[in-house]
Length: 98
Image (cartoon, rainbow, N blue to C red; front, side, top):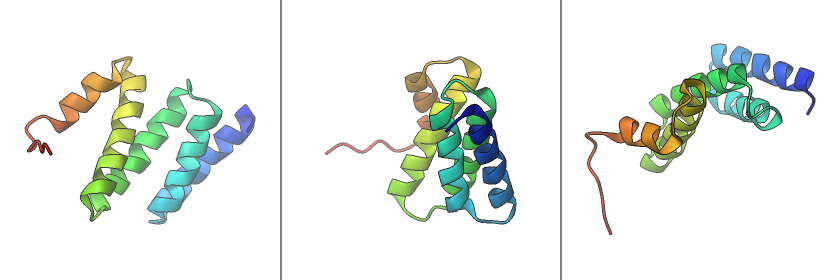
């Protein structure tokens, strides 16, 4: 997907998010980041969309996957380490070990 295509995917993700189509918006937001992994606007949109997905998810696994994606994009936007961002997002939560 060319840079223009990434921009269209990003805008479509925002349109779908506004219509309540969170899951489809997630696909478009991810395509935008895949097309331009260094693009800050794509990461901003992906973080916004996947945060909405995380808030509405009903399963622990889905919340974890969506939260990981938000942390990954937030780390890119802040110029931070992804692992540190994940630690910050999960601070104070119960830790499970098997």
